Length: 208
Image (cartoon, rainbow, N blue to C red; front, side, top):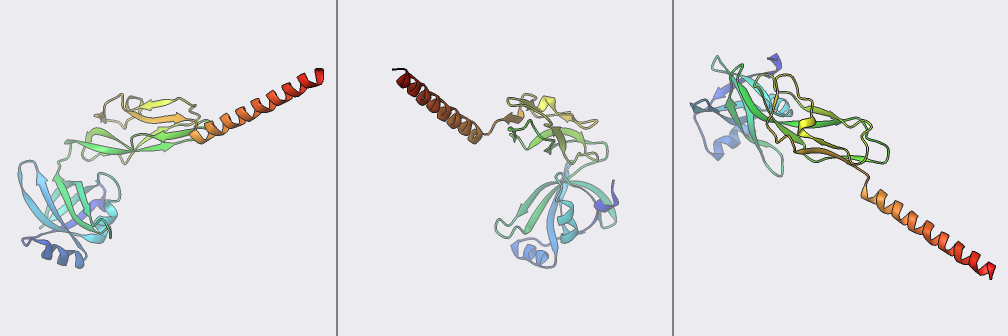
């Protein structure tokens, strides 16, 4: 567990939109912790530190709540749709060694065959992993992949200990020739055919 993930959380007993606004004005984020049959705990988190930590998917936080340690997984982040200010965070209790299901981002590396593009059909895959070993992403290489190549969830190389939850037949990446390139090639082919036809007609005329 990284020291960077250690966060001091303050228990809070006051609720409501007004109190939440005052918390955010003070640079803090209201949050609730739940899971494992425990009573929900309402806490305030340091805004700047937590905003940096949750930029990565499935952030795991090591909270210090009144001197007591608690591992939690960021489950949901609610933001103001206009100002993008974090309004509230839902956290779930996890334990070392426990396995959780999470959606992990897919990262594409490499370049497909010249003239083709790699279309990312699904940006995440669901995995079952240890709560303290959640991968930041799953890399998939498209280096040299030709038109018509399809990469499904079953083809992904998963991190050690990870189990695929997503349907193995789910399409992750499809490699194809862009439609505008196909259209351009068809136009060129049609133009070439017209020129060839004109030349043929001219040749026939010269023979008469």
